[in-house]
Image 1 (tube, rainbow, N blue to C red):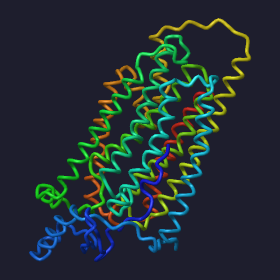
Image 2 (cartoon, rainbow, N blue to C red; image 1 turned 30 degrees about the vertical axis):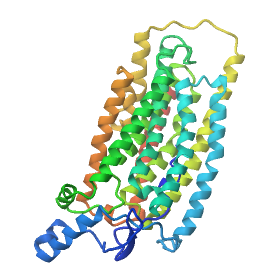
Image 3 (cartoon, rainbow, N blue to C red; image 1 turned 45 degrees about the vertical axis):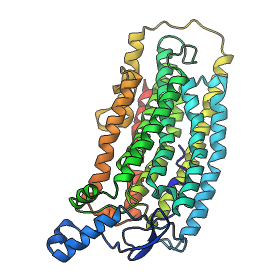
Image 4 (cartoon, helix red, strand yellow; image 1 turned 90 degrees about the horizontal axis):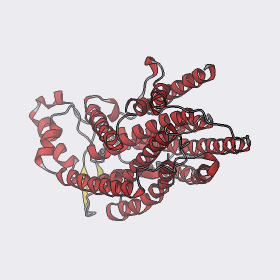
Length: 437
């Protein structure tokens, strides 16, 4: 929901030539970057030698911190974009606090684990601040360009989404057993979740640290030389990409689970939360798009759009939570009636049927139904595997094409909004189907 300013501010892109940079110790060095060379260019011994130098240097030298004087295609400087982004990200906090207020009300009957997950998002928001300070003081960089700090900070968001998903699954299990999803029947303790969080953070730190340490090795340089393009030094590592991709997938699954929760508990207002979460997901796509183009300063507008979508998403979620609360108040005023008994098997089948929709509009959110019978541990293992495969496809697939190295506002916004429109089409179709049933 929040992606705060991890990606804010421009970083020197592939088109920069002869930019002065600093290594981790702050010493000066000059790196000639230019446009990444294709493998076919390496028939010349001179070019091959240049490529070898580039491969070795690319991973050992960090990019310089943001250039506030850079002017993009809109005629706006990096410093001006930073002010816009900072204002928008700051403004997004108030509606999110309103969202938590209404979601916490007893009338909403929010699954406790899900409520904990949404509250834990604040740990991510405020937890990124010290990481950003260390990146600036220690490396003279924005957080998005210091991979190990960036990855660990983003892992807090991944765990937030895991809590939300597991909370919804627990709420659905309780609702199917006649508990109404109010959390009186608990099978997963917060202690277990906390232990999983601790292990995930330690593992992320170790993996990212190892990846950073290997970055200057000849093995990695040889690996880089096999690709048509060579990554800039601020490219995300594979573990950091996994963290980003898993966050996007988890959020989509949570949207599907919120829709199922509305159907199983006969609380239609919960479907509004699914709709409210759409702009938040688009904000996450914007952050990943900025990283896909290696944090190019030409795409500062993408970060501003990310911040704007965060404000919109937090506001729509707050409105959805308000409507859920009001629906609960109206239901409490109705005379009590005998509940209709329903077998656990029938309820389980109902959950699966709700979110699959038509064959033409299947998406990541349908994993909530496809994996409904799995235990939480199995679901997380499958999610991790899917995220690794997808992340490897993004990280290394981008080296086979030119467009990530030729930043374009039109391409970036297409990557953000085309999937978002398809997402809206999916939920619109399900809304229409629900209205006719």
